[in-house]
Image 1: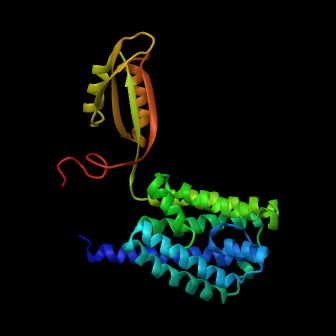
Image 2: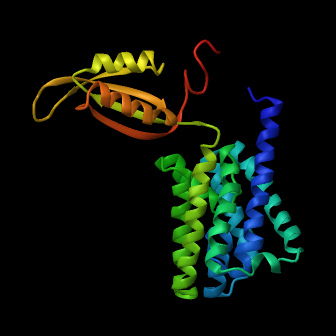
Image 3: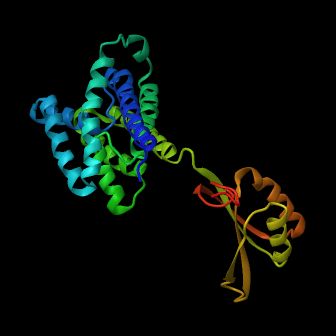
Length: 287
């Protein structure tokens, strides 16, 4: 059930996200003519090739992509795109009236980097509530849904292909500068989407003294332990493998203590981008 607070958070994310995308576009992308992907880049390329009017191309492309999103991503998704379709141009128009000279007279590489950061935060906020700013975000989200590629990478793929299409017209420098913006944006999208979730480490341990290590993890660290059954490919010997998810700050202590219990212990640690459940998103005994 969608609560009133949840609904307000959704619309706030959409509004703020579109505003940030407009900020990155007006203050960094447009003054430096950075090829950062999106419908605007498509319109510029088609204008260079065929002389098509950029504004009409943007409208036509947005309408086509809107229909595509409604078919493959659902009517509810399409309803949120309608809002962004109007919000983004309004924000761009309002911000364009400001004196942008003090903000834009910087190195093109810096403009590309910071535009990617700002736009990535904006897109991440919108994607986080399962919405879109429309345009070329829609093909990226379709790829994410059906090919299970992370959203940030999907956006990077679509934008990179769009930018590369402008290589013959705008030259290699413009393309490479645009790719910096795309990579920065992709990174921030993924970071924002996991914002507020618990990050942790997954530790796997193989040791002859596994029972002592298990007791240490359960008692001293107060972490759950899963015992997996492993078999050495060369020795053909079966050995228990301890798996334990811990907080990042606990790793150094655990590494040290396991080394004291069994200096020969085999330990593998991997970063976990998100973890939910007892001990992380809620404590034992909480509902």
